[in-house]
Image (cartoon, rainbow, N blue to C red; front, top):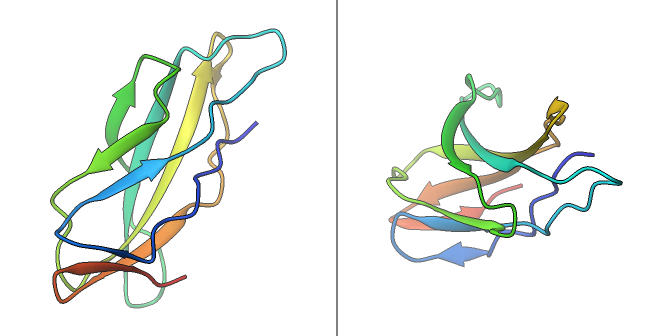
Length: 107
């Protein structure tokens, strides 16, 4: 089962954002870790290769703050869950655009 990110805030001051999701309940199998990914969206609306931002080994932790976002860029974020069978599917990510030092959800 893919991890669904909660809605992103419409505006975030500074150059960071906190991603949040609901704790995943696997039928009979516990989650070993969550992995947070970031891709940069190009001018053709394509996502670059996914970059692993953070691996969270405590499955009760369902948020991650991402720093270092750059003004004028569009990003897409997604989270996966891993259990003893491996990493789950990548769900559709959430996109944001950094504009004038603030983050705006653009999609």
